[in-house]
Length: 194
Image (cartoon, rainbow, N blue to C red; front, side, top):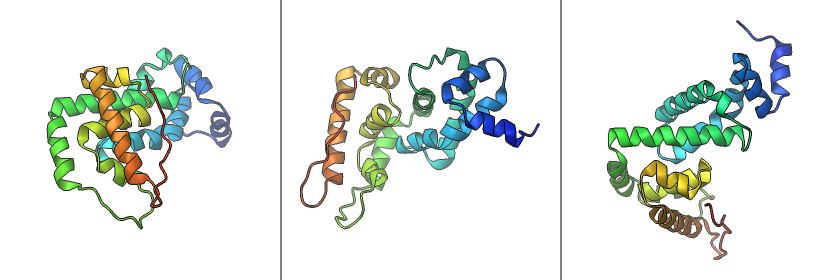
């Protein structure tokens, strides 16, 4: 069934929390608006975590399906985007664990993506993230891209909390060094994440 222009503009005018409430009572088209608004952000987090484009699309779709099935659990305490990004990050990690690719991915990043030292290039966050080893990239993107706390990332990765904090700290230091302007100014970063 096609959505009329009036219905589409009605949904477009609503906030995410309202769309979630409408979805929870059975209006699937409201959820379509949530997917439209947040789909690219979810896929972006997954790509920063290391997923290839098609894999990011697949995991994002699974994350939205999970969110749709569990929409009544969303309480609006955070953003819908943050909630679905956490779901997507956890699904991607499960996929990595299932495929036993975590160790292979770390070696692949070190071998295939050596850090680029082009000082004349514009700031390239994606390139800078590729310069991190696989575990650092996962920890940094989970905590800063997907919005998970250090504790949630540690639980999802099945790593000690201190180890995750160390990976995040080292990863952020590498990112600051790589992204620092040529004149030596230090970029200010977000401190403390749980």
